[in-house]
Length: 266
Ligand SMILES: C[S@@+](CC[C@H](N)C(=O)[O-])C[C@H]1O[C@@H](n2cnc3c(N)ncnc32)[C@H](O)[C@@H]1O
Image (cartoon, rainbow, N blue to C red; front, side, top):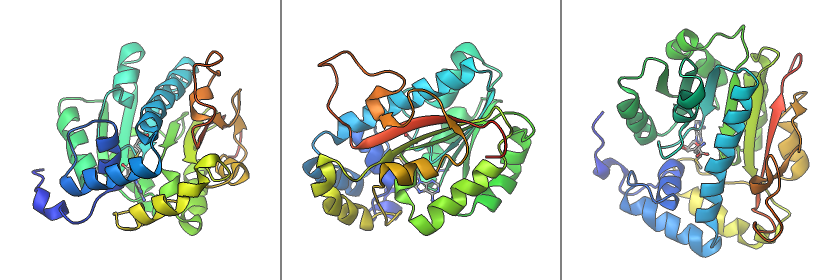
């Protein structure tokens, strides 16, 4: 699908701001301006984005080692280095990957790079309507809901207000067979970055998602439902699955991350 910058000139998107933070090339002037403001509010936002991608890779590797062979990456973003299908392709080329994003640019670029890939694809959908997402013909064709799924919601749920977020995640969890996994990373309140929360919220108010809301540890834990947290539990982004050597990591990253294993009804 051809993308015309003029359609997006005035309204940044969370996907393209994130792409700009990662140094990607699929963003427009409005997105870069918003990313710059974000860096003024949170100077380590670029590091945060890169460490988020590292968490994604580690979580997918963990799920692959546990035998998961199908992945639903919700809020997948604009393809960049280390996409899920690249990670699975190294050790389990048969693994299926469905990327889901609300952003048309993210979905168009994902489809471009996946055009020749029979086991990975991208659909445009809004997770606030989980029934529509789960009933999407591509999703039902690619994903076998009787088998374990790796459900990824990485750096995405803080763009949903409470009234949408918990209902949507509960619905997605409800279709996960035992042996499935859920990976979540999520911005937190209660950190030294709190002072910038208002600035961040005001930057995102002008974007496609309108909302950027940090949550407390307890509020983030609720997203896992009855899934059992894999050790070390819900930890700072860069500490999963193990903390870096002393002095090698920041004290915190304003983002918590964890992986849960579904054992029964989730
Ligand atoms: C910060 S990016 C994270 C991308 C990727 N998960 C990662 O960690 O590298 C957040 C993504 O969530 C997507 N998103 C936000 N709200 C969404 C919604 N309601 N439904 C689907 N995707 C959404 C955005 O378009 C964006 O691509």
